[in-house]
Length: 501
Image (cartoon, rainbow, N blue to C red; front, side, top):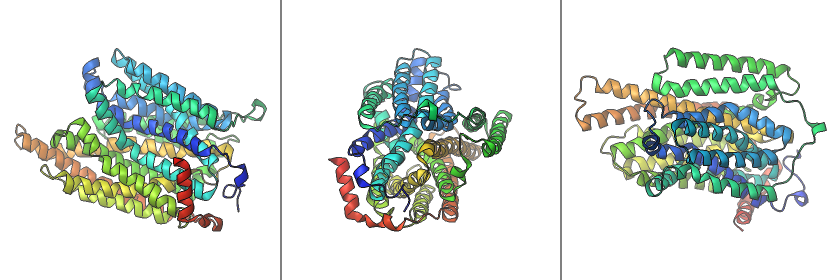
């Protein structure tokens, strides 16, 4: 039995469940920030006089910095210690959020969002690698990753609720200010609860600067190209140039990493079929999931005339389904069944939710159309995120956990960016085609065209999830070691009780 699966219980950190709470809070803040600002965007745009052409930079500045710097952020944690980079990321994120909340012009807000993304790129891989290194006993690891997976999958929906409440009853600025007390509290908790893993200067390996330039540059180019595609179209020369540049830089990055002794991303991390399959499954799943968030937000608020708060509340069933699926089902089964027996059915469930939404109409009731789709997607995603996050760092040496964590975070971030741009472009073009020759002055005609575009794009998202299921089935072959199946449901419940104690 490998040391990752069977450490001595006597050496386990007695404060590890409190450490999980700190890590979970930090992860929730990161995931929330990806969606909470979307709700506040119309108010921020009006207050700061941001043009329609530039408003996308409130989101793009964050995703560019976050997605582009993840690989570097993960490796920095491996070289200088995850606890140190985790706390640094939290403090930096709090500072950037405060700057954004006090923004007096668009440039200040854009800069603050980019700074948030940069510190998030340091924080996110550190959180996942700390979790992986803290929980190595299989039954406890299942519980910890169940909670982490629920947050990763459901936090975005919670962000819509929080964004609606803060924007409607306080101010759009509080969608940024709210991060400050959360980050500072988590940083203080991390200082006292997390184990010190500082690496002495004499034992540090050299940072792979060529790899950092090529890898981060490639991701930056791809994220920027896909974000611009939503407004320019996929055939735009600028979009094609950046996508091509990104692909070229990543290809050269792969060649360089094979020959570098201290690689930014060791090739055996992504070369492993389970870790590679998990990253692909998460990346493709997020493409569909972010597309759903985008369309449902507009469908509920613009077509069904839900208030921001009610639109956020409408996501609660999906969040509850993700949490139940992750902690109540996946955490119990992860040590008993092969990982793909969770991931593949999860992707198929999520795809069935998308299939349900392809039938949406302007007058479709929420309870009969949106609610069943949300529940199917939530149950499915809970089965996907938790085992995939665990596989991403399973069996990786402690000094490479940050790079492994950054890989799946990169897949999640790039998938979200591509999903938003790709599905938004499809929906917009289908809607435009539908409206040709029709009376666009009629509000019902415009709404019907918009919903038709959403339905077609949702069908594409369903196809992407089905492709992800096939890839996961073919690539992922991890089975729990014999000792992993000794926990049982009672042991999982005992571990969960320790979290709540």
